[in-house]
Each structure stands twice: as structure tokens, then as C-alpha cells.
Amino acid sequence: MSTHSEPGRSQGLAIDVRGLTKRFGRKTAVNGIDIQVPDGEVWGFLGPNGSGKTTTIRMLCGLLKADEGTGTCLGFDLRTEAEKIKRAVGYMTQKFSFWEDLSIRENLEFVARMYEIADARARVGDTIRRLGLERRQSQLAGELSGGWKQRLALAACMLHSPRLLLLDEPTAGVDPKTRRDFWDEIHRLSGEGLTVLVSTHYMDEAERCDRIVYISLGNIVARGTVAEVIEQSKLFTFIVEGDGARHLAETLRQSHGVEFVSFFGAALHVSGRDRDALERALAPYRGQQGLAIAEAVPSLEDVFIQLQEESAPQERPAPKERAPQ
Image 1: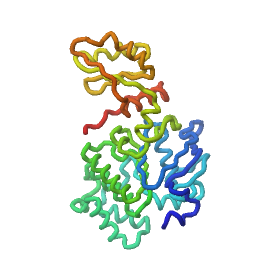
Image 2 (image 1 turned 180 degrees about the vertical axis):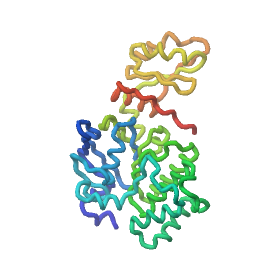
Image 3 (image 1 turned 90 degrees about the vertical axis):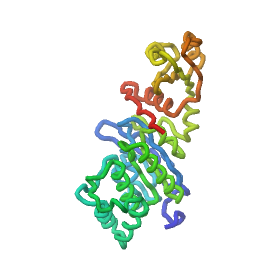
Image 4 (image 1 turned 30 degrees about the horizontal axis):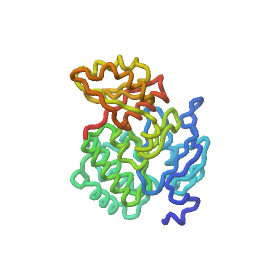
């Protein structure tokens, strides 16, 4: 169906929601979120565990009713047309949710029947070929590695030709090559006009997105392109590396103007928003034999850590390491 003929569809927006709110008892899991995702773009959804990412995604795909807020997903009203949304989007959950005692093909044929897809066997065959599952189509899902389970889950999401994919930490627990192959497929699909919203903890994945949204404790605290989010942070970062760099971490953390210190391999990233104070904190170590100190453009991970420290200082969960390239 042409996007121009869809009732209520915001021009050029696959997702257009405002004030999205969800409460569980006294806890507000999602607090007045606004998201407008243009057609054909890949957006990254970042934030620590418990920040509200999954709850937001479940509201967007019609599985969870918002307590407050309005808007559309693929032109369908979030409040009154949830069933239509479910049939128009592809949703990939965090946890593998297919039948482990059925083969890949059997799982996909079952899903195709649930969607009442005409000529289901042919559609399943096309999807299996498209996602490179031919050699494993008779293998039981329970015998698959994490990467192949992920590919099966993506195939199931694509069976009904959705125009929007909502992917909830789809690459958790898979190896770097599988993750890279997965993202190559996502961008290929985006090139064909598919819109993607994907939650992730991996900074290299976030950097592959057109735009990112950072959510914490149910609130959006940063959004934009990677470059825009880094610029908005007003952060300065110095890299300290060489002999004994790691031993300076605790001392530097206690220094005025140093907001956080993080380990990147054998080097330290020392960050804060007062550049002069950072210079003064590092001055005693400049010229020290075997130690190099240089200013660098903050990485997205530096900003991610800053946002975690500011929005949930009581938790301070350890950031995930950047995946090897």
C-alpha cells in the first residue's frame, strides 16, 4: 500500500509518537517520550538496562497499551489500531522465542500461517534463500548457535514483508563477525526502503545508525546523529597511555574537574566539561617518562558513560566494551 493512501499517516514518518508514557504501579517506566522516525532510516535506541527501551518498543508494536500519549506507527493509531500495527511491523525480541523442537523451515511455515500469508511455502522458501538458511533449513532450532538463531528470528520478522523492524538487542551474545553480517543485512534492507529501530548496548552498532536516541529511567536525555550527540555533550577527553597509565586512574578520579575515568585497553580516557580543570589535573604527569597525554575527540562511548553517570549515578553499571573490529 502506498504511504500516501494510509489514513492518519504523518508524511514521511514511520513512527510519530508524542508523550508516550507507561506506568507499572508506582513506577513510571516510560515518561512522556516523543519519537519521530523518518521512513527508510536506521535508528539506534541506547540506554542502560531498565531504562525503558523494551517497554517503549512493545508499545510501538502494539503489544503494550500506553497509559498516556498519542501518535501513529506506520500510519496506524497507536491506541485504536494495535492489531493493524502488529501485522505491519516485524518485532524481534531479546530472547529467542521460537520452537526448539521444530526445524528452521517448520518454524517459518508456522509463523507464515499465523500471518495468514498466501502461498506460505513459497514465501518461506524465498525468505530462507534470501537469508542464507538453505543448508540449515531442516536443522532443529534448538541445535542452532546463537548467530543462526538470530538469523532465524530475523527471517521470521521478514516473512510478512513488514515496512518497519523493531529489534530489541538483536545481537546480544553473538560473535563479532555474526554481528557485522547482521548489520550488513539491516542496511541492505534499509536501502530497499525498510525502516529500523534497534536497541543496542554496543557503541560500534550505534555508530552504524542514521540517528541515535539515548533513554534513561524512562526519559530521553540525548538524540541526534552520533556527531550531534557528541557535540551536545560538551565533553572534553584526554587519553593517557604508556607505562603506569592504569595506576593513575584512582588518583585522577579524585581530581577537580575530572568527571569520569574509563579504561580503554591499557589507556585511560579522562573526561569532563571543564577543559582547563582537566589540563590542571593532568599537568603533574606531563613529561613523565613513558607516559603520553593527548587530547582527543570524545568517543560515543565516552558520552554514553557520561550520560549513565549523570542520569543514574546511584547505579553506575559497567559499560560494555567496544566490540573488536
